[in-house]
Length: 297
Image (cartoon, rainbow, N blue to C red; front, side, top):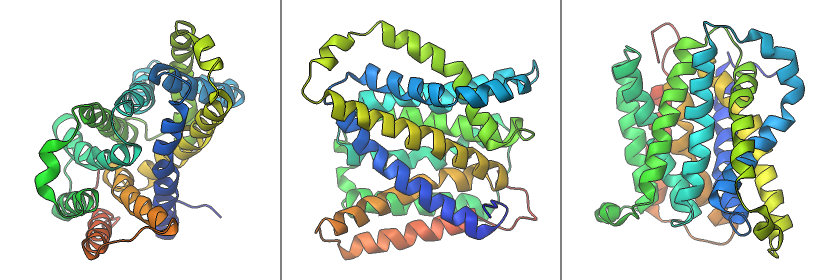
């Protein structure tokens, strides 16, 4: 039974999300072979909207004057703008760097919660976020911290997207507690899907259709939508409600681990410092998932 109130399912959810989202960046890259960054993002959102229409027809009455703005905020901060910002960034940076920069999400979840939602994280949680971020940087840079300053300026678009994720996580945790994670996802797509469709109509799809990569790129974007957006957001929003905004966003610390494991599977080597980085990441994530009888964000 899939029960997110139990810690083993929480940890399995983190691993599932890290695997899915760790693969989403390469899918974006494949999508960009035929489509523009605007088309990749718009199709990704529109496909999710279409897939979820049956559930929208079932749950749309949940939207009220009291919760509508929170649902809209979650939709645009957590789905719409990040979709465009990530694909824009990947027109000029690698998919691996994009995935690794995503590790800023827990830091923004912490800061947004403190400054805008009056949250009071435990000292162990704050320490865990910092430790996890250090571990993620160790994995990203392979111990060469002097290379931070050479990161492409397009990386700033991903930083902006992770700020949106921080808003999304706190809004779900503090403002939408009475709605399940699945329903939040469904209703969020209700507000962003039609806008994505309108955006798509103003692009030139004929150019994409004439590309030799069209069908492969389309398959990549559809896969990205179904697994990287719809299913993963079901799990992610539910995880936030059963744990904390910090623990759920800390999945982005685990993504670089999966990137390295995929590399191992493909015959690459892993350095000792990267193994150390993995251990530091896991320690940080563990510290964030603190005792249930204390207030957490």
